[in-house]
Length: 425
Image 1 (cartoon, rainbow, N blue to C red):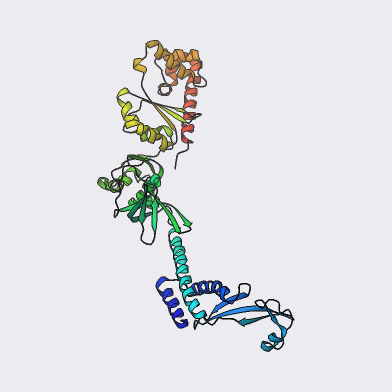
Image 2 (image 1 turned 90 degrees about the horizontal axis):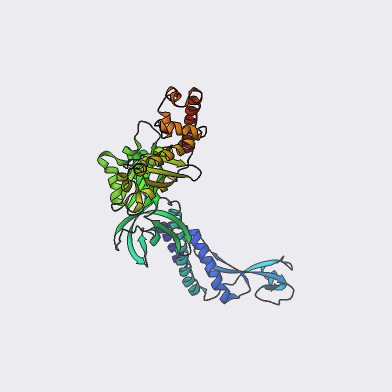
């Protein structure tokens, strides 16, 4: 058995890449437990396996005493000096206590110990292989279903795609080959616990990194992603190189790059828009192709009020509000889309509304605002479109400069607020 043990250990080391020493230590530990049953439960034992021959010995450490009370732990001074002439009371001595029938016990125990250790080591090796794969995309085969969770065979191990990480519009069958995003890798009692996802926004991000070389080399950056899995996603992209069009790079020649990703996502629609530090432009880009009449930013509430013509309302909001929801997720701002009501308002209501907007600008009094509205200036943009000379004829020379400066200051304040607005990553 001894020679066979070494041969088996060397074979396992070659074939499975498991260090022979690790297996020998596992065998020694298992044999130690088995030895205590046949040699004595209280004796201080150790098992030694010869690394070259495979010989197995059970060694007990006994304390030298004058009168033996516990033969499992003690040895008389007389017996000790037969083994070691200079032995003294209180010292310890090692003796071999290998049982006569230990070979049969050792063979069975060593086999079980090696099998158990092999399973443990293999689980550890698989965990080491996959623990750094979080955030990657892996391919596997659908094996079975546990309730609504999908069990996917990755080759050396099975992973799970929980129902919450499935795309609601996708159906899977055993044997289907699918790709998924590695959400997490944890060390569990039965081996690595790998959780996959096809609904996570980062799945789309990783697909673009694999498909678009400009994203892989960091020339183009994905600034934000908003997704309703299985239906539609919006991604905002930005280029570090002015000569590289970020949207065009992601779409690819004849749309092939984005088509490959849409095919992987089972037809999910993808809107690729240009990211802009100015929230006004950013929101306008996100809502395209809808045409917006006006955007009113409320920095305190972190919201954007958008005015559109009645024929653009459904386009801007999208089916069941999807376009508006995705825009809000993408930009990180609350988005409120309203139909233009000016045409439906009476003359007095129009005037009151315009006066309220202009008088809300610091530095423009209500009386001055009324004079401006009566002269055809209904918005901040209208004031900025004229020269100070044009305003002089309306409010007088002394107030014209102040009004124009107030309009410029308000525009700068709004742009600064939009430029500092955070975006979702």
